[in-house]
Image 1 (cartoon, helix red, strand yellow):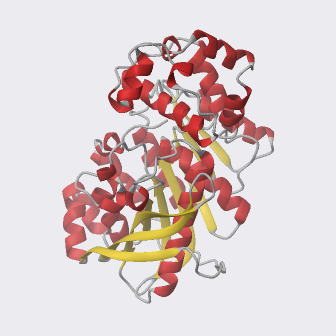
Image 2 (cartoon, helix red, strand yellow):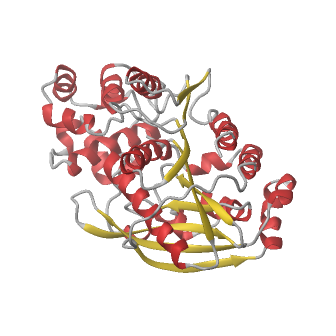
Length: 398
């Protein structure tokens, strides 16, 4: 579950500090990792080229402090690459990358965005007001190969539905984007990569980042240095149980996101139940007309059919429960330094997601994971702590 990335852009001062902290990582540690043969990159299309002065001007509009840390100009490109749809079929996906201009090798930073509901907000569209438009060039100007995957369902794959909060496809789309960018920098003599990789994301981006991290650690084909994940719905089973069994906030926009997750699993796993199987009327009819405009006010559990909710709680909905459990990020322990941020008062993505996931990792022997419990913070107010903490954390792990 996630919040629109525009919420993240409201607090410019914290984004500015986050960008400044990234500059501290610098040009250290150039561990060599031998990549496989190129097979993912399809095309890299130039969007814009900005001089150091132009990037500095953009940075100064965010905060005057940023002008001092802009070290180079950038080339912004739309990247199209090969990946897989949820059924394993080959598809084309896209994202955006900001390539710093300079002779020295640069680290790579992959940022997984939060929930978006409009095609225009996909990073590869480089549209005004979006996260990548505002900050992508600045990341590049600070000396980072800044990677922003669109995810499936946006950009080059906009004709497909977005598999919302689906662990495998989110992780795969982000990993294949990294592979494509690796091939891009190997082929482009104007940019050098020092083989370091950092990853980060908040909300759906946090869930996508932890999904990506699991794949990266299992594959060991990248020199992943550190990861920060904020407010992701990592324990889908416990989260769904809470939504179905206890009163919640009743906020319609939040309920739409919970519904989106449920309906995504319904089609991805081939369950194909009608809306009336899950939801009472008039909610089923409203969702059928327009999910993102549906007036789903009231505690989420009161929107559901009683038989369905009861079956989910007592284990009778075996197929759906298995689909939900397949998207849990439990049962593994990270090896690279990792921080998990979450506000204890988060009423969109409940704190139990991070608390139980962290405990699962510790129980399996993880020693490199930190739980950053943000007392009294909700889904929006936790962002500042996540941003500031991420920069400090990355600077401590060169």
